[in-house]
Length: 360
Image (tube, rainbow, N blue to C red; front, side):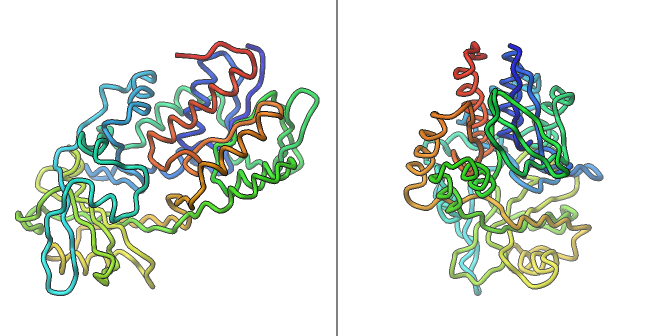
C-alpha cells in the first residue's frame, strides 16, 4: 500500500484499528503515551486466580470482538458465562432480592444495553480479557511505540505531522485518534475544527474495583446468581459486586472464591471497606486471603443528550481534511466489543479515503 497511518492510542479500539490497517498493507505505527497497551483492559493472574481490573467480558450477542478473536487465532479461548442473574441490595436490615434480567445494567447506568442483547449473557476469554490485547500486541509488536505521547497534530504536505514530547515528530498520510474524548477534543480543535470542543462534554466518572479472594467455606452457599447491585438509596459504598468465580469458569482455584466489588468514592483504603460491607450484605465469614484494588480516576464514559449528533458533526468536518478519524469508547459506546467495532470502522474509513481495498 505504501502509506503510513498513525494510530494514536493503544487501547482496544486503537489496536483493533491497527490490526485492520496492517491486514490491508498499510505501514502502521501505534503510538501510546503509557507503557502498557490495552487501556482499561487489565488482567492479573496470581496463584490460580484471574483478576480483572477493568471489563471482565462482553455481551455474547455482540459479534465484533468475537470476529477479532477468530482473526487473531484465539477463538478457541472464548468462554461462556456460567452463573446468570443478579440480586438487589436495598440496605439496612434487608436481604438480597432477585432482579429481572437486564435490570442490574439499568441500575448501574450502563448505556446501550437492551434486553435482546442480555438474553444471551456474557462471554470472556479463558485466561481473562487481556488475552485479546496480548494476541494483538504479539502480532503488532513491530508497529507499537509506547511512551510516545502525541502533543499536537498539524497539517503536512502529505497528510499530517504528529509532534511528541522532546521536539520529535512523525509524518503520516492518515491518522486515527483512538484516545479519550477529552484528548481528541484538544488535538482536533487545534486543527481549527471548533466543533471538536464539544467532545469534551463526555463525562468520565471515577471508579474503583476491589477483587477479594476467600476460601470457598467463607462464602455462604445461598448466594444467588452472578452478583448483586446496591439500590441508589441503600447507603452502601459497594455499588455492585460480581461473583467472579461463578460468573466465568476457572476464575479461582478449586476450594476458593473470588469476588469483585465496585466501590464509590471513599476515604482511605477501599479494600477493608468493601470487605466489611460484603460481610454485612453477603454474609462472608472471616478475613479475605488477599485483596487487589484498581483505581480509575476517569473510568467509563457517560454521554450527555445530543452526543451522537456532536460526534457526527465532528466527523463531517474531518471528512473535509486529510484522512483523520476518531474512535473509541468516548464516541461509539463503552463496551469492549463496541471499541473493537469503532476501531475497525475508523480503519475502514481511512482505507477508503486512501483508495485501498478494505479487509474482510
